Amino acid sequence: MSDPFFQPVSGFELPRFAGVPTFMRLPHLLPDHARYGDVDVGIIGVPWDSGTTNRPGPRHGPRQLRDASTMIRAQHAVSGVRPFEALNCADLGDVGPNPADIADSMERITTFYKGVVDAGITPLTAGGDHLTSLPVLRAVAKDGPLGMVHFDSHTDLFHSYFNGQMYTHGTPFRRAVEEGLLDPKRVVQIGLRGSMYDSEDRDFAKAEGIRLILIEEFFERGVADVMAEAREIVGEKPTYVSYDIDFVDPTFAPGTGTPEVGGPNSYQALQVGRELEGVNIVGADMVEVSPPFDASGNTAFLGVSIMFEILCVMAAGRAS
Image (tube, rainbow, N blue to C red; front, side, top):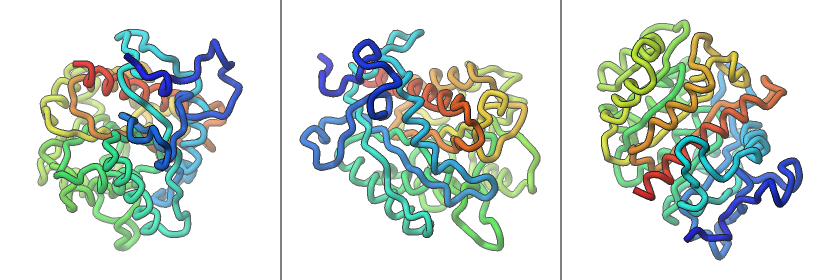
């Protein structure tokens, strides 16, 4: 039986444009709430983009994603999964970053997520730029290195930027491999494309055993075949899912800091999420939604729709 406390507010009870927005209209819980320990999946905002090296703005992503998420309803249209009945879900609020200090912000994020993980809650994150994933992984990978399915047009595997700056949104997964947070042989990166500085990031991936699926291979093989390989790579062990909205072609998702043309459409963006079914997801994020570059809010709506797909996969896994 589903818990009435954790059900989202229905659009039949309160119009979707009314009320204080929370992620998917779920209850907002702080750690001292009596029901905090009953949460299965916590949706968390990380309004931080200090790792951005070009167009800033993802610090505003969680707020726009929350607002857009009021359009999410209770049931998946294809699978019939009702995630809010299978899982106790809640909006756990935002991590308060330090916009003037990258190291302090990362420490704050990791501390917040350690509390979430210690409470037995699976985090679903709304970023934030992609550096957000690193401090989250430092908490989620507490029991050993994780596999990862990573949707992106960039590898984010660079050693450093600007003469030795080690922490940018182009370096998080290089650091995660070095720190033993990810098992590189259980990491697959999907959708890579665009012009390049050089091949340093791809050379590192090849040396470490990370599977790179460039966009040409993605389109040639199709979603189902590519995702079957992704599931095989990560296997049944704990896996993190990181989804950069710039995986999607900017025609459909212009609101991002580093867009790359020639990517998947919005339907394919949902498809890859659905094809995660069977993956042992212990955490996931949606990053790089940058509201200043899409005043329409369509990028954010696509972002939360993808988050709903991932949530439904989590719910299906719990039911199986």
